[in-house]
Length: 332
Image (cartoon, rainbow, N blue to C red):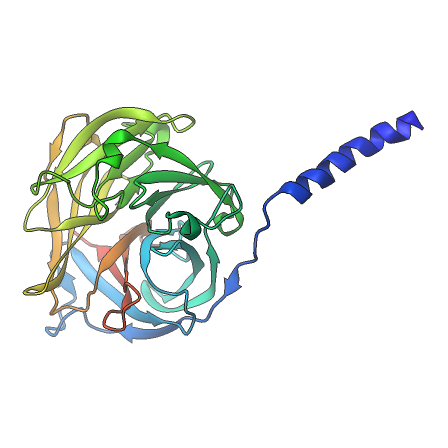
C-alpha cells in the first residue's frame, strides 16, 4: 500500500501543478490579404544606393486584432516570422515569396501576450510592446510606457508566459513615447547581453540613448552610449547581421513633411560605454515613396548569400494608415 502511494504522489503533484498553472487560450488563426507593391516610388527605380528594392505587400485583415505591428524577427530562410503589436499581441506566420519578392502571408496566427500571473500584458498597462529579439532561452520584448524588457521563455512564444527581466532607473527616465524601441542580443553577450536603443531622448534632441545590460541570467547595467540623432528621425527598430553590422531603422513624422524613413548601419564593435555613433546612411525615403510608419526590421540571407532587409509598418489601427511589408537586398 505504501509503495503504491509513493508511486501515486508524483502524479498527484503534477496534476496539482497543472491545475494551478495559468490557463492559456489557443492562438487564433487569421486570414491576411496581401496586395503587391510593384514600385517603391513613382520613378520606378529599383536601385537606391547599395539597396535594391525586391518587392512589397500591403497587408490587411478582417480580424480586429490585426494591426499595430511594431517589431519583427525572421527565421534563417526569411520565411517563418514572429511579430509583436503595440496592443500586446503576438503575430506569427510565413511569408510566401517568389525568389526574394514577397507574394503573401500564410498560416497567420495571433495570441495575446500573457504574463506569468496568467493575465494579458494589455490588462496590466504593458500592452505597448515595441521590439523583440530572439535569445537562446526564448524571446525578449521591449515594452514602452513601462520601459521594461520581458523574457518569454521556450521555443513557442505564442504559448509562453512572460516575466519582467529588466527594469532600470535609467530606462524609467524615458518619456511615455520614448521607450525601448529596439533590442539587440549579440551572440556571446559582447559588448552586452542585451542592448536597448530608445526611440528618443527625454532631454537631448540630438541623441538616441543606448543602454547596455548583462549577463542575460541576471542583467545589470553595463553602461550607456549614444547614437547621434539628426533631422528629427527617431529610432524604431534595429537588427544585427551575421557579419557584426547593426542596421538601424528610423522614422520621422510631422504634418508638414509627412512620414519618412531612414536606414543606417554601423559595426557592433562601435557600441562601447560612452560611445557616440553616427553610422552610414543607406536609404532615406519620404511620403512620395510606398512607405508608412515603418517600425519593424528583420534580416536574413537569401540563397545567393545576399543580405535581405525586411521592413514592416505600424498602422496605429488607423484607417488612414497601412500595414506595409517591404524587402530590399544589399547589393553593394
